[in-house]
Image (cartoon, rainbow, N blue to C red; front, side):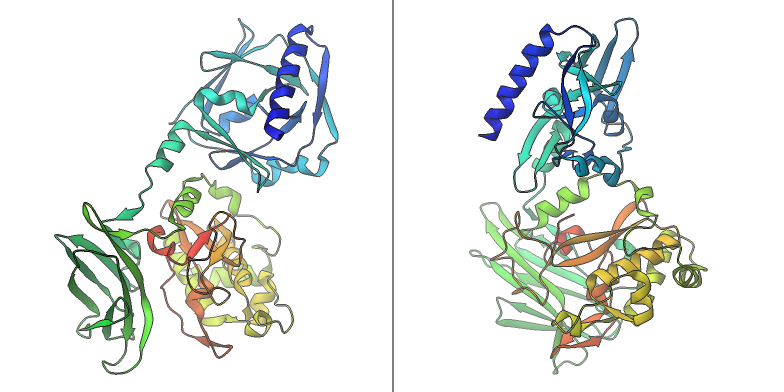
Length: 464
């Protein structure tokens, strides 16, 4: 019904403005609670006669060329895939949400002609700027309406093509980026000629690797010589198999579930490593352009200029030669010095999540870990954002089976840190230790430090 109303309003507006003279008031611009995005990047939007509109000039920060032709009094909009992105900061782009339904400007008829590619599209003068309907960019992509999130999503053709090419399975999978291999454990899987090859390195305190197939068959590999291991498993000709890796300190004692869990599918073309149900969503989130400079300043619960934060950040990073080394130093300190607030988690009071409070109290829940990481790293001039999402932690049953990926809310927070010219994933909460018998047990590790998006997706879903 909403879509029908929008179409009718668009037709009515077209007929009115088509007869209007230049400079005549033909409608109102209202504030809107609809969030408009282009390839996931938020762009300021307005309600013009019931339809989502944007300022044409704003597109220049979203991968478009917007050119004014004085001789023809026209605006030319073209997609430019090579143009650097420089979107408007989300808080600024959404500032008119406070004025939802309130009049912001008059809509003025204009003699300026606006073209999206070769096609002329309808345009208006609002506050001296040329506005267009978001839907009229259809030459460059497709507009989708997300009713659940009240969001108008425009996806360009190239962005949609990249989404269509996201794989559902892999021939190889690494748990961590190569940058971590000098100081952290990792696992690599590769399928070749019906054989599953495992290789990697165990955490420093471990000496053995146990491979469990379908919860039953077990192989134990000695990795005590230099911490590295290799193993091969011949795959069955039919059916799907699950593999779990456990690390142990002694061959015949308890093995910890540290190495991860992987699933192998049998297809008509052979065997593949299954992607996690959250993988498509997570890759899509990572495809969205994030401007690093947006994640350097202060925000709610994150004050990088606070004297205690600044003093600690300077001490931890004084010998670091790169943003990645600053990240290593800050992460190591946080996971060794901040405890998980199990009392608050189990309902006995509220945990402090402001970065300064976390620093002084020495404990918090996940959002406190993420805020402290962000405050310390931003103080060291390392762009860091706090990510909210869903994780298969203590508040879940440990499986994606009953999780509705599209609709599930957030239950966890972690960070993405801009280092090595990429956004590095870090979950300091899960790296700090574990909960046993409702008590926090400190066991600093790097399992969720710079994991690949393929591995991270087995346990985490990025929401925003």
